Length: 477
Image (cartoon, rainbow, N blue to C red; front, side):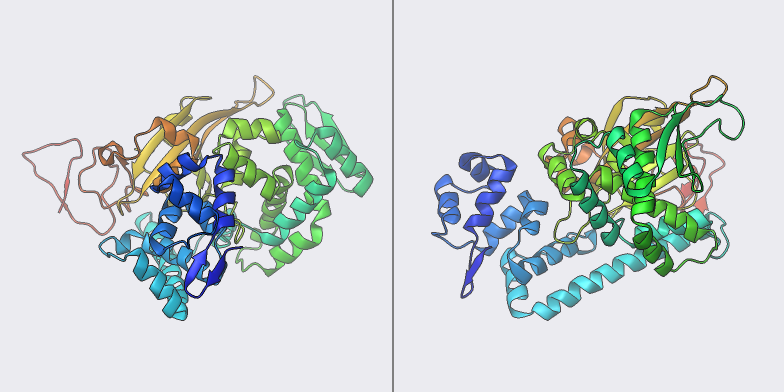
């Protein structure tokens, strides 16, 4: 733990641990942060205190690690202020590192209130965007479908459910295998809950034609469709084990949720069991540390934990445990028609809840190109840039008579985290001109010049010139 002497902060142990986790020598670390090797050595040996300017340099270079290993309340306040002030809302402000540190040292309560106020403002903006999205799309009132309610509940929870995540991590520690094999999951079901798991082929017709999982409680029998790939079969077993093992925890969380539709609560229970299954197959600390070591290389994570590409991407978007956060990612799944069927975002980017996403986003191209990874540097109207990775996937149906499911998943983070996201290596993230300008959706996007626009933005007048025709047949007034 860093120690403070008067107003001076010594953090040699934290700096050395950070460098070792990053796999860097002193020379490489010094070059990355912009220090001399001798100065870094003095900092690591606690011969010199760390100054506000140097602390900010480490925070910029290692935003997750340095904030995560911060020393005490003041460093956590600094991390919160840095995140709030990174909002484009404050783009014109010129607050120096020294000013930030003085604010935290001299006005800690004000710093806390500022961070809370900014968080409340962001949430209000998201709610306004939801209202605008609903009005622009002609959706009356709060007519959310039950699964939309559940989807928004997970978003409001920050895509992280602490009690269930920790319980799943503890159970994974008991089972003690990586990856968890089918045989071990089947053994746990049998010996912990008296449930037999069988893999059964289907004739491809009738109600069982697309069977993934069926649980007969009276007989204690779990049937899993044989047409599913091994990763899906493991997930189905993990789901059933989590449903039985964490029934009380899932019931408590679902029971406390503020939901309107009667069908939403059982849907939330299913969603929580799915969440627990992912947390069981990919235990929080082990998965987070491995992901960081591999620079979030999805294919290598799939091999290490025996999960599918989609499961690994989804799990990365849930690593939001306080004081142990992963990189803030957004994740979504898009079908062939452009519908967003899954979405989670720990970033400032929020997806449209009604209608399609921006046609310039790389995920739409990925749907048509299965098993190939596409990357993109994109910029939202607020100026925030994101690195996106998208891959088209095909889920087998098990029969010629049933069409396979085709879709794409996308995972991305803000460009500030590009160094820790292997897919950014193929992009020139420093080139402002290289970013593709995208928006949330056409109805919410304020961009005046976009050849891909399908609809004018809500609330904006259009001008039509009968003597001129461009790609888009109107101009925004």
